[in-house]
Length: 387
Ligand code: TTP
Ligand code: MG
Image (cartoon, rainbow, N blue to C red; front, side, top):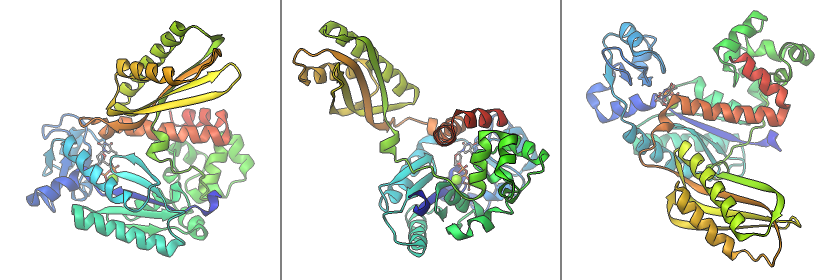
């Protein structure tokens, strides 16, 4: 049951800036600002904790950062380097669990439910992970442990940098109550302002509302906020393996018997999968075909390529070969699908670093959860409120 999950969240401290300070000792202890230019162009990616004292933070226009922190050392983004370090961090995490969901370049959830017996053991594992990251990568991470994703992530955020916070289920309400509503997942600055207008300043204020009032104020989204305010969050950790597949399928108005028509459909589906792989800047190593016959019998066949691909022609040739392996015995085909899994990011894939891409991915996941748990109405409200 979700109530008994044990989740750990890791978030590296001042990630890009910390890597630069590690590699250039003369920058340690100094306000380091990565992204943007010293002339004040662009938007900054992150700032070392020394620079944050001046009020500098991610996504701030560089011009403003220069004004706030004139003595700051501005450095360009070295995406390749950060990507490599990100992979090292994830490799350390992978030693301790295979149920890992990487959420962004420096952040991941681990589902420890089947790995450790209790919170003490989880805390010991959290210390060990922090130590390995420090000893091997000379970087610090903040870690949160809790009964769900929301509380684990909150925990990693509460004592940054180099923090470790364990939130046991029975402590959740007390930890949450005094925090501002903006700490609730999905509540951005605009929603926070609107909730404040309604007299809802802290998470405790929300938890204290009758659910009917929240519903009348916020629609189905009120249910979602109410649950979070009480430390309830049933989103599962979705491992890359589960999440990372790109597929397209088509049900035909009439069953197909003609080989040429099947090939045309597969060509279209391959092109569609290729287009989406490219849009996400990933490539698939395993290509699968799905065949559903008129009698609803369904088969999938897959093959792993020597090299991951995003090319429509490669995918198409692969699924043609797979189709030939499916025993059709003269039966009509009702549905065909093409799927790419074993997704890999290209070596030059920098979009993981793009805050827009990160935010979009997180928002997509959040909205999916809202829809599944509280229905389309909750999604509508969440969008409306966060406009
Ligand atoms: P964060 O984990 O949000 O920030 P951080 O690691 O720099 O600082 P901390 O976690 O200690 O608060 O993001 C990780 C990296 O992603 C960050 O180092 C730079 C990049 N990033 C951007 O480029 N733009 C952004 O708007 C954000 C939020 C992050
Ligand atoms: Mg971080």
